[in-house]
Image (cartoon, rainbow, N blue to C red; front, top):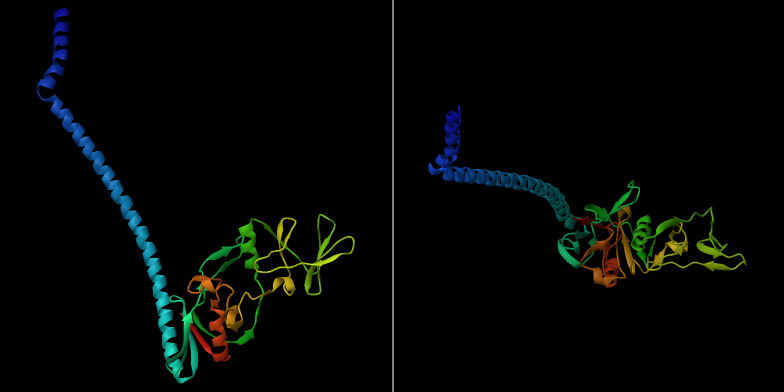
Amino acid sequence: MEGYALRQHQVLTSRPASFWRLGGGWYLALLLILACFGAALFLDTATLEIRRDLARLALGDRLAELDGARREAVVARQLLRDANVQPNQGAYLVVSITDRRIWYKERGSVLFTTGIATGSGKTLVKEEGDRFWKFDTPRGRLSVTSKELDPWWVPPDWFYLEHARTKRLALLHLSRRKPLALADGSLLKVEGADVVRRYPDGERVVLQASEEKDIVVNGKLLVPPLGTNQRRFDKVLGSHRLNLESGYALHGTNRPETIGQAVSHGCVRLTNEDIAKLYQMVPVGTPVFLY
């Protein structure tokens, strides 16, 4: 038994030596190389799959952009076809949103052209998410419905929301029927066409507001009621305005440096000098093609 055990021990201890003498090291090295190659192949395959997926996503985005551009091109071609019919019917305006330029034409001749500012394309969403504003200049056919000299601007709700977010303030809406009691004992209320502050001693102060000056009460930005003097601003729209449908307009600006940019809330801005010229030239009822 001891001899058998000794022989078994010799066999077992001699096998590793035989393994290495017979090239076992090269065999292990080959296995390691194959394992590394397999891992590299797996990583390359995974990388290719990721790149393929990213390419598909990018292609989807590109196709969506292309589809949007195709739709806009169809609208533009239709508008240009309509505009080509207009020379036989009288004068008309053409607005290029992309080129940020306006033309006033009659019977194929350009009577006036100049640079403009157009909608920013930005979106403003209320905190509740139940309402949003998209600041685009519309595409399509509109017409001049009326004209104004030295127009007043009545700021919409989005104006106050923008200012409140910039200043990190909450909004405070004032109602005509319900005065607001303030911490110092005064009352904020509407009297006639003005928002006033009534103090306990009887003093009455008419509050002032402008595009650059908000009314802040108790750490909140006040939203005056429509129809009050505190909710209509002078000079913001420049010297003249040509009103279009759906609340849009061609108007001047108190910021001439913005001409040539996409910065408005949807209207078409011109310098005060240019809008004054169009005001004199363009009659009410004139078609306006925007593309």
